[in-house]
Length: 327
Figure 1 (tube, rainbow, N blue to C red):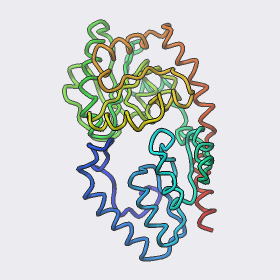
Figure 2: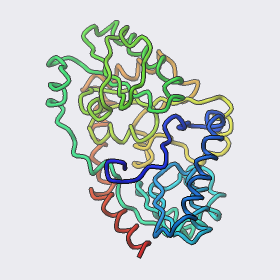
Figure 3: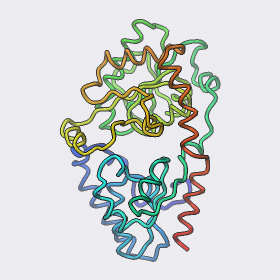
Figure 4: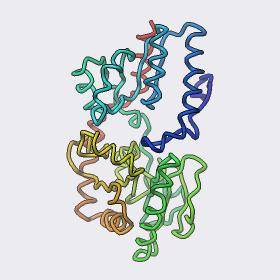
């Protein structure tokens, strides 16, 4: 956004957290930022407020904009279809229009009288990299297997997942000494003992393109891997209290976006107590074999994922929606 000429009031660096317990420590900083945004909304006339993802915080920003008569466009729909549908009436009061990026979201929100447009997924706006070209640029030897690790961008995710992913990679390298390990890192994150698995970091898009198989945290990463044609498994765990609450609130049986988009189980999901070194290593070993049944099944399903995510041009469609609201 800064590169596009946006004047930044602040950033969310250091405030990202997934889960009720994990987010508690960020409340004071979020409150201060919300107050600053509310003051700015009152200080001069704005045509539209475009709120991108981050629904817990942005629901309050939407309320502040609504109070001063500013139309609100929420880009990336809150996951009310998974949990928290009771919040829809409040959301409907303060959000003017929703730009959804998953195909099943438009009918869900429209059924609850929320004006919604499926704009397609923004990942489709990024051309898929050539696997061989990326491997060459990263200096990966020809013909060697590559495992990608995606422990997450949030500090809480890395704290929960990195060590088990690292140790699973170590197990795999005992049977496959030639195995190369790439760790997705788009920021200056540190990964303890990465050298013990011969690992190195690279941008997430490069890791998705170069890897033969991957162990990934839940989230958009799994769609990125599907679009790159990379078989993978999903691993996720959170604070036990957050998990206990989630089990009672979540209405969907699947967690991974690939499985949700396809409405069937394609990518194996390992959650909470299921996230163990033996389980992740065994599943990854099967996916590293390109002729295995699970690896072939995923590669056959991935084109369907891409087709269901719409067509490229999501950003342009969102811009048109925003200009229409501001008119």
